[in-house]
Length: 201
Ligand SMILES: Cc1cc2nc3c(=O)[nH]c(=O)nc-3n(C[C@H](O)[C@H](O)[C@H](O)COP(=O)(O)OP(=O)(O)OC[C@H]3O[C@@H](n4cnc5c(N)ncnc54)[C@H](O)[C@@H]3O)c2cc1C
Image (tube, rainbow, N blue to C red; front, side, top):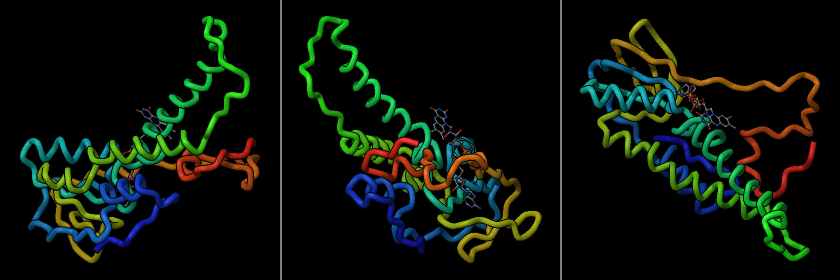
């Protein structure tokens, strides 16, 4: 059974997200005798590989140790575009005068509300990447860390999966330059978790 996961802030939107992409109490299926394809990592690459292969009739297992949707849904494409939209709204208010729109002095920008909208959109979109949706597509979804145990075997959560082909879709991580002081660093992985305004570096 998958470990419970809490994503701060622990609000209705992040709970909806988790219920889709790392469902609490998720019980991994009994592995089939041999999969045509085992996909490690349910980010953009893994989701597309798994859905495509299942659509062609292959027996497919998809393994994710953290959040299905990977960087794109959780910290990358989706949150960043939602934030950029909020920034554009602020810029349009700031520059409105040149279009003949008079905005009274004292307009306030509320980063907390902008971040709540980010989490709301992310939760809504997370249904597309959910464990339940991929199960309905015919994919066996395993929550847990995968590791190869042989040339045609992978272990996850104490279960051994046999495969003809494996796709390693485990993504990558950015590293900060050595010159960046750790205490002042914010990243795409940490900003979506904050609700207050990040400090300027
Ligand atoms: C701020 C930001 C904005 C972005 N905006 C865009 C955009 O607008 N458009 C665009 O096309 N791209 C965008 N990207 C890039 C996009 O997010 C990545 O290209 C994409 O997420 C890569 O997908 P992936 O599946 O290769 O890897 P990931 O998304 O990193 O997924 C890999 C998954 O593998 C899992 N995993 C790793 N090891 C194991 C293991 N042993 N067992 C089980 N699971 C494992 C990880 O938990 C993870 O979920 C953006 C990225 C960032 C950071």
